[in-house]
Image (tube, rainbow, N blue to C red; front, side, top):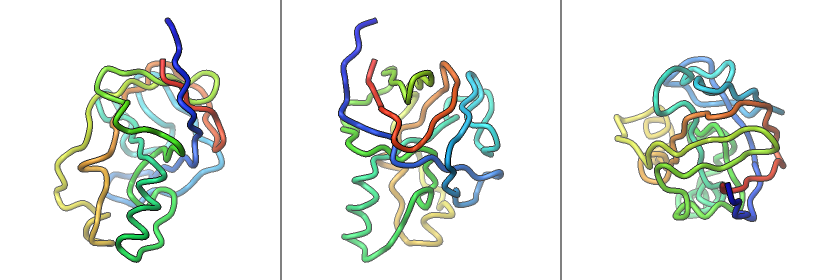
Length: 149
């Protein structure tokens, strides 16, 4: 499989043990093939095992709305610096670090209103989130490279 490099890096990884909670930043996270992230409430046999978001979107939202949102505050599992979200479409695969491979299953989701919207008045996942399945597992840390496959 030919690789195309994305000049991107993992900014942060975040989890929450239950659904409907804001996520907390972690020094690393174990991604499990066919499940999601160890210890995260969204893990399971479904299409939204892991949520990715552009870190630049978080920063832009902070500027536009006068917020100071950090890693996990938009309920994302992985914030990626330098990610061109328009280049990641359903069916696309990308690697985090050396081992983890994610496949984009959908873009966005209905906002029901989520804990993020109720708490901060704004949410990014309904429009910009990349929901993924874990194809190959492994450990992911901030600073790891992100490469489109």
